[in-house]
Length: 304
Image (cartoon, rainbow, N blue to C red; front, top):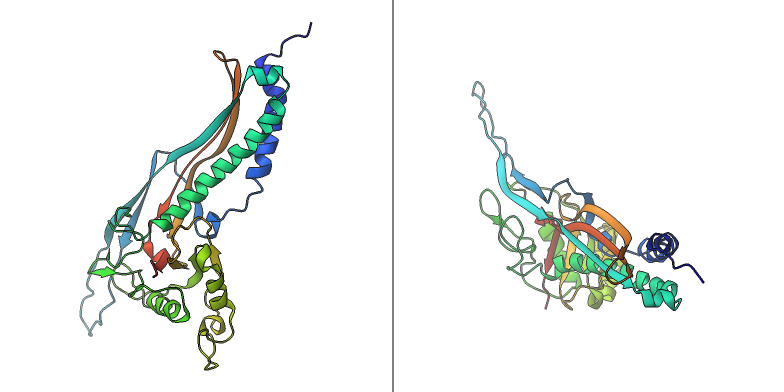
């Protein structure tokens, strides 16, 4: 009579097999979100805060003998990120083990579990852009990611195209000019560099035409395409398959505190037995959050 397999023996045999299948999917993935979001290690508590500061205005002229004046900066607003745990599990029943199906079924489940965690991260990241124009989803400054009314010390600034427009040579150049006119939190001009177009599947070919054409598109005047001749948008385009809008598009800049994913705890996998059901349970979890601190990291339009 065969000796029944103990849960510890089952785990030592089956868990490495499931891990290998899971890792084969998870570790070899091609992350879309990494094209747009910068991953950053989270701090060891349940939230992460980043103060957004303002500094000084332009330095005034000092006539001979005049004392220098003093200014002080401060905190314009606080951006708070709340970490959340994402995970899923599956169970291999005793019946599956008895019938010898636990390895085959477990490998299939492990593959789908890895795909589920990948899908969650991609969807959460894409939703930052899907909600970029929605006033119900705000950043630390109290307005949406893309807005005409981001507050600064004196007034506001806009990272939204002045007039909503489809992605074209003209509208892209207008947004690039808007980026060239960017100001800091004191209203001083800063030099932001546009790095790439960000769009969904509906704009993938139009973006490629604008980026790669030697001549200006949509005209027979034989004018050069300044986007290409000036070497702008050097990273090309990030086309995200989970962007839901067929009209919206963005231009990402090199503002250092733009879109980010804060990883509080990397992926963890584990397997354990369930005394009541005689099942073996396999789970995978990770803890992170996505968002933005400086909205100058991306400019855009909802399109038409």
